[in-house]
Image (tube, one colour):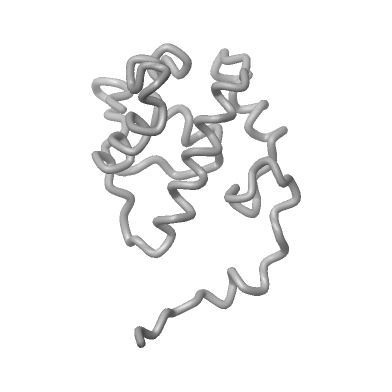
Length: 123
């Protein structure tokens, strides 16, 4: 039998206060996401919230990874929203980049190279 390590902080942490976002970071709130979106000129729709939930879920599943792989996350989002148009759809609702901009709104740190200061958002 494999030994599974568990982070004690996860065990003693209080459950998420918003059941609509069960995988949200502990210090993130929906209101904080709305505030960041307003600052970036976005009015959040149900599609935006679906992407935020998907990102938070992905990050929760990969919490033990030392680094979030940009390409894997990109592919996971493309697959998750394939029926709506995949990455093309995501770029239409997050013009600042479906990963870089949505990570900021979701309270997550975007993977390395999700944005390039000399070029802008690349993911």
